[in-house]
Image 1 (cartoon, rainbow, N blue to C red):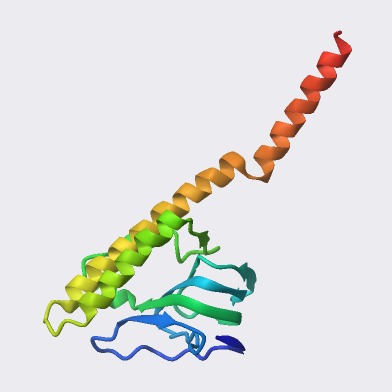
Image 2 (cartoon, rainbow, N blue to C red; image 1 turned 30 degrees about the vertical axis):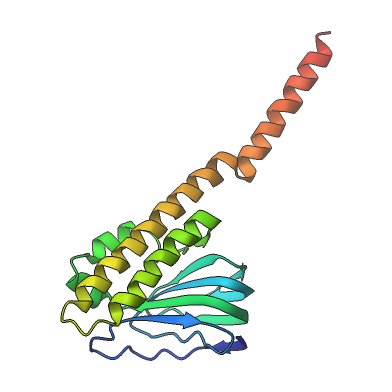
Length: 194
């Protein structure tokens, strides 16, 4: 998929399709629904993503999150990935409140951009494959199954993001600068007291 466009905001149909999993490939378009949350997982590809006024460089194995009524644009290529769309009403109907979604801090401002390692990629891929299997069932409990899998995916994304945020605090630019400053002070102190 290679494109440059701002996507129109069309509401998701008010039906069983208040959740949707789309497999992305080179022929896909990243469409945005006005009343939906979007989890976009670029497994293979790269480009630039614009959410409201923030632009990010997206590489392979990156998850990004777009909330309802946000402007969204994509410029780049995707050869493999997934887009999950869901409404708040659907999530609440499965027992996950809007407060719980807010506490995950995935769709707030600024929205995280999560880079997955191989183990995290495989864990989420297993959940997405499970979603694909369960969504094919003609059962009346499809929404319950999909809702449960969606909650697992969101909680896993939160856990990964939280771990990355802690790592960035511990090993981020400020920590590196502080560490280097400490080394320089110790080096100077040692040279003065030889």
